[in-house]
Structures are given as structure tokens and as C-alpha cells.
Image 1: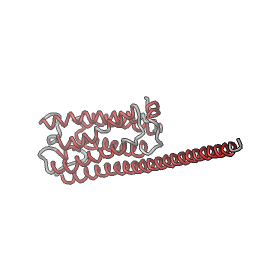
Image 2 (image 1 turned 120 degrees about the horizontal axis):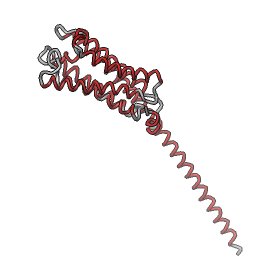
Image 3 (image 1 turned 180 degrees about the vertical axis):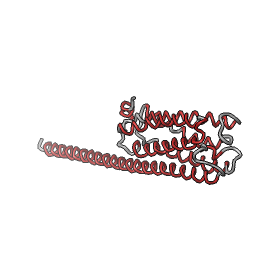
Length: 261
């Protein structure tokens, strides 16, 4: 009995030390988890910030390249007018510089636009109807690349060769899709009422301009009408890059609920 008390004391002390070690290990593990979590958040924040920069630079590159291409292409084409000629007539079959302007103008423009949409996709604050609108923006790079693959006939008449028919179908589909994209994007939950109204009005104006540019009595200004429509598209690209990308992130569920028309 005399030796039992010292042994019991040593056992209690050992257990106390073991519990102390366990608590220390638990605290160390918790600190390590918190540190790892903080590092992950920092990396995600850095990646998101870089993604926003890349998206915005691609938006600028798309708009600037498109503007320069239209100006240079028009300067190269004999008797070409910004007022009366469609943009796709830069690539009209059998006309001077057609192949070069298609391959080195419309195709790179479509690829830049595609790069912008790819970069924006994981960052853009859309959900529900506005997400459908964002995906419909893909109709525009398809249209630019399609112009190079299916050039119109000289003068871009309605009907004609097989490539002209394909060109007409592509134009109708992508203009309708573009108008729908602008209207549906207006339902993004992160937009202010002012920008919602702007997008809605842009979609309506885009479709109206498309109808007007096809009217024979407006043939002398159809090029101007189409360039106004392209100006609206450039504004939408900038709006996506600066108003829908880089905003505080909402959960997918919150985006879906708040995006309902």
C-alpha cells in the first residue's frame, strides 16, 4: 500500500501530460488549418484579381482590334463606303483583299471575342436568365468567324450563291441571338437599374437596326446603321467586363434567385 500512492501519482501526472500534448497538437492542427485556409483564400483572391485584369484587357483588345480592322479594311477596299456598305462586304467573294481581310481580320476578331468570353466565364456575375444571355453572346464570335468561312456575294444581296445563303442564315440567327443576349443580361442581380435599362434598350435597338439596314430605301445608310449596332455590341462587351466581372461574388443559388425576371 505504501508504494501504491507514488505509482498513482505518476500515472495521473502521465495522463495529464498526455492530455496536455493532445490539446497542444489540436491547437497546432487548428492553427495549421487556419493558415492553410488563409493561404488558399489569398491564392483564390489573387487568381480572381488576375482573371479580372485579363478579362478587361481582352475586352479592350477586342474593341480596339475590331475598330482598327474596320478602318484599315475600308481603306484597302476600292470604292468602299462606311455609310453604304455592310461590314461583311470587306470579305465579299471575288473582291480585292477579300481573303486576306477574312483570314487576318474577321477570324482574329472572332478569336479575341472568344478569348474574352472564356476569361469572363468563371467571373461573370450572372444566373438564370442572365446566364443564358451571357452564353448567347457566343453568337457574336461565331458570326465574325462565320463571315470569313461563308463570305457574302458582292453587294451582299438577299439570296444568291450557297455561301451567300449560308451568310444570310448566319446573320439572321446571330442578330436575333445578340439581341436576346443583351435583353437577358439585363436581369443580372449585380446591375443597377440604370445599367439594366441600358442593356434592355440596347437589345431592342440592336434588333431594330438589323431590320432597318435590310430595307431597300435605306441602302445608302445601311453601313452606318450596322456600325451603330456594332457600337452597341462594343458597349455591351465593356459593360460585361466592368460591371458584371469583378463585382463581389454571389453564390450560384443567390444569383439564380435574384436573376429571375
